[in-house]
Structure formats: structure tokens, C-alpha cells
Image 1 (cartoon, rainbow, N blue to C red):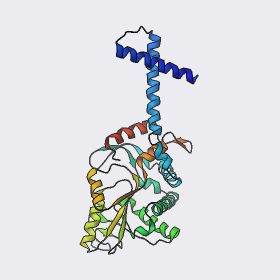
Image 2: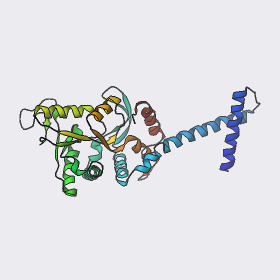
Image 3: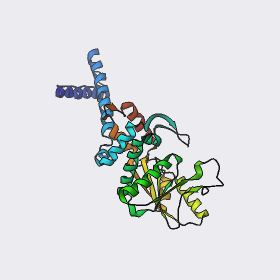
Length: 287
């Protein structure tokens, strides 16, 4: 049955293309004209669906169990949202990674701490950094959880701090101006962000440590869900300063893995979500 249908599809396309190229006006009944249009739609829909499903097939093959666990966690907690979300630069994105939703209860916080600690050990290496820096206030709880988990799982006693730039005003008591945490001279720093690879975080950290006359080096930025939108200019800056970009997963890996996949009986990324994402990524993605 499928073979016959496929042969019919080829015939209809062949006949239509001959008529279009040669200008020969074949007399085709209304029934067959409608059949051709319908078959065109079938093929177009099939091709579109197939490309979305296998567009990241190689990326899916590369996923390990930890990455799959993380992707499923951000899906089931509702942390990967779809809609219309304005970015700081004024551009509108069709998706948003809401880190807070991944840790909305004790189980979620426990999972995130374990996943991130294991990923950092594997991807970055425990001996390659001394200090974890969190530039975004939304990720501060995760920084402390990772710090705790690295100690309990691997005996790695790391220090963690965050940026005071998220405050409206600088405190005159209790804190450490705009840089919170026990950062020390000659520390190797790992920056952790939820989705961005902003050069702003690097500049702020370097400026504040210079004010304190502290010399540090930055091994890189560890991104939970890499948006893959790093500008050429920022890529150049990172390369010149020997700053690497690590990631737990990329947004393409997450979308490709979740597309039409049932998790606990629910599909989190269907045609509508995939279409809007790939249209956006084709325009703004930087691979």
C-alpha cells in the first residue's frame, strides 16, 4: 500500500513538473488536480516534519544519560517555556529557560544540584577551578547547591560568590560591595549562567577584582542551556582571553530530543514549538 502511494506521489510530481517546464498543457481532471495538490501537501508536511525530527539527530546521538535527565527535568518542570519573550536588546524569542522552575521544590533542587555537579566534574574537571561565580541573581541558589554537592559527592571544597550588580543600590554594611563571596588572589574562576554567554559577566568580574587588587584568571563560562547566539565579536573576545564556553546542553539538543517525544504521557515540543524555534534559530543562531 505504501509502495503504491509512493509511486503515485512520484508520478504526480513528475507530470506536474513536465507541464511546468515544457509548457505542455496536459488535460488533467479536477480529481487528479486535487490529488496532486493534496500529495504536494503530504510531501511538504512529511519533509518539514522529518527535518524537524532529524535536524538534531546527530546531536541526539551524542547525548549522554545525564544530559537526557536534565532535558527531561526542564521539560517536566515547565522550565522550558514557549511563547513570545522580549530580550534585553529588544529582540523577541519564541522560548525561555526559566531556571527557577527547575528548583521549585526540594526534589527539583536536589536533582539540579546532582546533575550540575556531575556535569561540571566531567566537562570542566574539579582541579581546573577554585571559585564559582554567579552573575545572575536567579542562579544564586543553584551556585550554593552545586558548591555543597561538589563537596559531598567528590570532596571538592570550592568557594562560591555572586554579583552585587543585581541590587538596585550598593550596601554599606555586611556585604563586599558589588562582589559577594570569598574570592582570592590567583583564583581560577568558573562562571555559571543559565543560558547566556554574556561578555558583561566577564567584564564585571574583572573590574571588581581589579578594584580589590585581586588577580584572577577565568577558565570559562559553564552554560546550562546554551542559546548558541554568541556574537562573532564576543567569540573573538573569549578566544583572545582564553576563556572557554562549556555547556550542559545546547538549545538545539533540547528541542531535537524533546520533539514529539512522550515523557510521562505528555509531548512538550510539538510542531508549533519546533517550527517557531527553528525559524528563530535560522535567523539568529550562531554555531
